[in-house]
Length: 448
Image: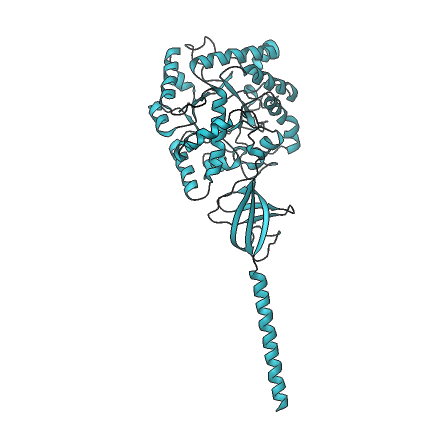
C-alpha cells in the first residue's frame, strides 16, 4: 500500500514539474522582446534593419510606414536568428523612434529657402504635393490644361516640341503652360550640344546647333566651354526654359563607348574641371544645370533600349567616375541625374535610379543637398519594373522624369493609401523641390 502511495506521489511530482517546466518555457517564448535598429531598406515584402550591434535582420512587416534611415523599435516574440533570410518570429508591434536627418539636411544649397518652402507645403493638398514630384514629357496636345489639372513639378521638352516653331511661338507655348500652373513649372531640356540638341536643332532658334563638349574643348579648351555655357544659358532663358539636363560629366575616352560622343572625351581630371567650369559659368542666371549620369556611365551600352549591367569595381568607379560629380557639386550644382545602369558592385539588385546605396553615396559621401532626378523611367532599362515610381522615391530621388503621368500619379496615391509609402517621404521630396523653386526665383515669399 505504501509502495503504491509513493508511486502515485512520484507520478504527481513528475507531472507537476513537467507542467511548471512547460509554462516556464511557454512564458519564456511569449515574453515580449524588442530590437532597436535603423532601417536600411524597405519594399513591399520586407524591411531590413541593422540593430545597435550592427547585426542585419530582414523582417516581414505588413502595413508598415517606414523610411530609409528611420530608427525603429520592433516588439516581438520568438528568437532572432541572424543566419536566417527572413526572421521567423511573431511581430507584435513596431514604432518609428526617430528619423535620420542626415540626408534631409536643410543646411545645404537651398538653406535660405526652406522656411518659405515649408510654409508653402502646409497649404498644399496631397494631390498637389504628388504632382510636384514629376518632371513630365511635354504632351502632344492640351499641355496647359494637363499642367493645370495635375500640378506637375515641371515639363521636359524634346526636339519635336520645338520643331518648325519660331522664337515667339516657343515663348508663347511656355508662357501658356506657366500661366496655367498654380506653382510655376520647371521647364527642362537636354541641350548638351553635339548629337543632343533639342532647341538649337531648330534653325529658327539658332543658326547652327551647339557644338559637342569635345568639339568645344578641342576648339578652345575650358574657356570655350565657359563661353558656350553662357551663350546656351541666355538662349534657353530667353525662351522661358529654366533647367538644362546637362552637362554630361561621364568619363569616356574610348570612341566605341555609347556615351563617348556626348561626353568631353577626356580623362577624369579634365572632366572634373569641365564639370566645375560649366556649373560656375551657369551661376547668376535663371537656368540651372544638371550633372549626369550618376554614378558615371563608363563604357556601358544604351539604357534607352534595355537593362544594362555595369560590372566595374567600386574602387574603379570611385577613382575614375565620381570625381567629376564631386567637382560639380562643390562648384554649386543644384541637380544631379541618376542613370539606370545596374552597378553590380554597389547594388546588384536595382538600377542606379532605384538603388538606395547609390543615393547614399550621393547624399552622404558627396554631401549633395540639391535635387536628385531620375533618368526617364519610361526607358527600356526600367519600364517593366513593377512599382518603379514608388521605388524611385524610396531610393531617395526627388524629381521623377515620366511619360505616363496618369499611371505614375495613381501608383503614388495607391502606395500612400495602402501604407506602403509615407506622406513624410513625399513632404521631404516636395519641400526640397519647392526650396529649389524659391532659390531660382520661380516662387517668392507670400506668393499665393
